[in-house]
Length: 390
Ligand code: ADP
Ligand code: MG
Image (tube, rainbow, N blue to C red; front, side, top):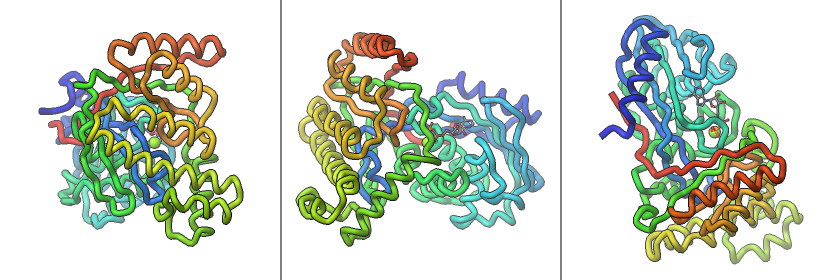
């Protein structure tokens, strides 16, 4: 069964037809994701536990008879047009770098772009932009799956995730890891994707939120982040420096027991960056074990500890995220943390279903009292990954 509602399919179909004056060859979709736990561990070869959410980006697409590529989005503006012969990262700008970057990146993973037909694509989405729910991976994964089909490439989903990551890294210039695309492409309903970012082995872990009477509340602070600049890249560099000074290929090789030695070798700031990664990896493993053995009602303290580690050791939180977390906990959430790359975006709170309205109201009130912009609060459920819809 399609994870998409008929109305969403009709809307993207109509949007495509009004731009390009013919019906699309097919419709594909891919979800955003939320990371339950495991932050900044992906590019350190560590563990992450995201899940695909019930918010999706949908692409209607057709090949052309010539080499022209045209991409348009429901977000408005003219269709962006380019020849397949000009498809290089230095020619991309703005939002179209995502879909065009994916087409280019497929060429880096074996597609012979000199032999492929051009295409037209129209993109619609209900994944919030810049909220830390990875609208970027959703658009990349939807376009990657669509082009993989119409160009007959036969790439598997793990490879398509790498295609999306390469597009984001090289075409957009955001040095992000493989987590977002993996969640978007490999997610399954009611489950998280436990990903080992060193081996790229992925395992589907049942969440069991529904039978436990729990919901995951997103609190979008509306503080916008930008992964292409600033803090995110600086944290990556700190991690690389820490690994080099400790003589390991990546911080994945450092265990909690090694931290006393690391404290001797590293300056205070680098040590705290390293300690976040090392303890966060352990928290992901502990969360997976707790979900398997004890159920989701026991993971709250791990979410809380993750937030403190990001706030104090990795220093990627902002006052609005801290306020969202403490207020949600005070109003009955069993655990809460900021999620995503940091410096803005969203917090998550694991909340007994009956308390969702109370937690949402408490967070809105606390933000109003402190003079912050009104946050968005909404529940997300774990949904299936990227799919062909029509
Ligand atoms: P996040 O992934 O947290 O939502 P990013 O900054 O990584 O935020 O990615 C958001 C960017 O991705 C947008 O600014 C836009 O350029 C692009 N994008 C995502 N979804 C769409 C869409 N449906 N249509 C056009 N561009 C999109
Ligand atoms: Mg993103």
